[in-house]
Length: 266
Image 1 (tube, rainbow, N blue to C red):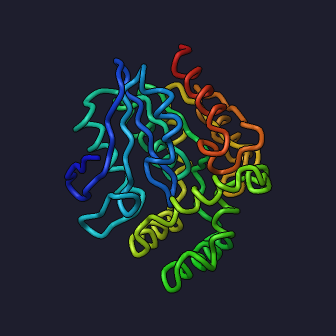
Image 2 (image 1 turned 30 degrees about the vertical axis):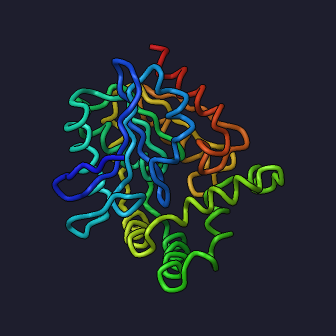
């Protein structure tokens, strides 16, 4: 997969598929563009797909040592302007959704439709900052093994975690998470933990918006998505029963169809 040299990041990406419209997929924290491999396979026969790794995750790196949300936003804008050059259908999950909210509000010229999955405009609470910093410090000093179960309990819903028939998937997903460079993922995580609220962006999002959330999402529960739907003027909310914070992996067929139907229905 190619690396594009942006102003302040070296960005790993894929650009494939056929069609007049381009869908851009932006992943959540600890993942890479692989988070959307099911959706990419499903949609690429009709759409061009641009999926990329945020700096500090997957195979992308920072050139200036920054991992904050503004830096991720700037990378995303530069990527779309360079590789696509016209409005896209932007789909972001969790951290990717933070970027999507800013993109929809600040650069409406680049967003034809917006898909927000398992995300929020909220900053982290004092309690959650403390919890996530503890997990992050453990990964930094010792490695993933002491906090693997805690991380998976954040990422996935109860339905998936308790389904013994999916234990092989559990192991495969955990392995993917652990492929990240430890020193870089710690920095990327810090950028997410310390983000500020972007509530002020919501009135400025005017494009058609789909909000997807799993009924068992722990870090971004349904009420956070309901708040987005209540405050983004041209939006619809779909709750995916049984999915957690990583619904594209837990319930891929349901997410595939929700995304396809939204894109195809004007």
